[in-house]
Image 1: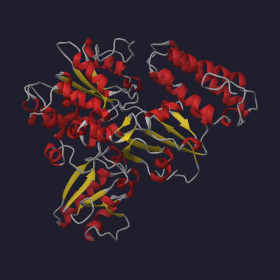
Image 2 (image 1 turned 180 degrees about the horizontal axis):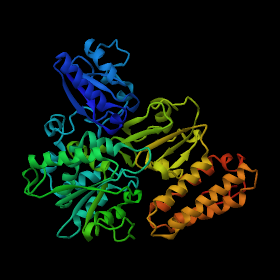
Image 3 (image 1 turned 135 degrees about the vertical axis):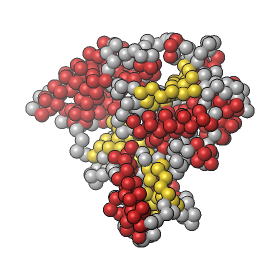
Length: 529
């Protein structure tokens, strides 16, 4: 009998390790012959810990039970994991949340042993690397360009342009830097893939190294991810032993190796130049651009900086071709995106799908609406600096261009849901306070503007509660937002106005007690007509 249980941090947080210990204890006592494989999570977090049993007759080859507690283990074993058990979920392949997905990046997560390179290869791993070995660096970059892949960290910059710039740069040393400093609230895709399928990231970085001529890579990992650090370190050791990393990767004669670098908990180090400063041992502060990291990055050398999901997409592109990948998604938003459902939502977890899915469909049909059962009032997309969207905007397709048209962004794919008890004025204040706390302090609009913004929002909330007039204060907020957008050195200050402006635009009653702001300064820089 073979059982599968996640070692993912989210599963462990709700008792997966205790379930594993109980399986060991009960099987030893009862004399059962059981093999327990610790996998990544499939991303159905409301069902964690989710225990699976191998069953060749089931769709997907396994049946699932969840959420499972230690007390359930003995009865499950006694009953031979009968589908009559209250925690039985049936065949994994029949679970609606999984059936509705297009799993390209997360196709192995929750299935394979994350520390087994052999398991990775059995399930299709290294196919992309095999294809890349037969290509010239220029051809590899052309495939990435053809795919239309855009950076999944939030900026959505075309990957092919960045790769080609690094490839053409002349230098004695080039680097690949993976930005694994996943700091946005409500996001966990990077952590899930690093804990559940680390060889995918390694393969993507190796392919990138071959393409641009880099011989060294770094994974800049946030300090809050100790499980990912352990798994990545072990996976890198296995990759070196297998010859995937080292003086001649895969027998190509080209050197490439990867080190894990632990950050110190600074949100600003998710910005690529602040990350590079930190990686060099300096204080994490934003650099002025130009020069761009592609030309002068780590230690002044050409550096390809990508986030985890961007690099984990690369093996699929190389294995199947850029044209194949481009057929997924809509318009210039090609491929799939792992959307992360969080906040006040019934079915929280990871849902990978091609771009173009409607936001409301994802929140209500797939996510099940709010956990409290109250009406959805606001949905924030793109982390703490993302826009707050009302019910009237939930028919928007999840793609970069559609979101840009309404002043919002897809970001890293984090989706946080709020019910009708939320106070959007308090959320707008939080945006300013968050920026004040996390700012690197290098530029005045961000450093000072965020503090003044928090003060102004506190004044608005107090005036609203006391029946005072907030019109003049809202005008000051509009002016401040303009200064922060136009004058900040990086997206930290430049995007802080996004949640503030969207909250005021779509939920004016939370600021003024009125539902109509006609004639007042709006938050696109013009007067409402």
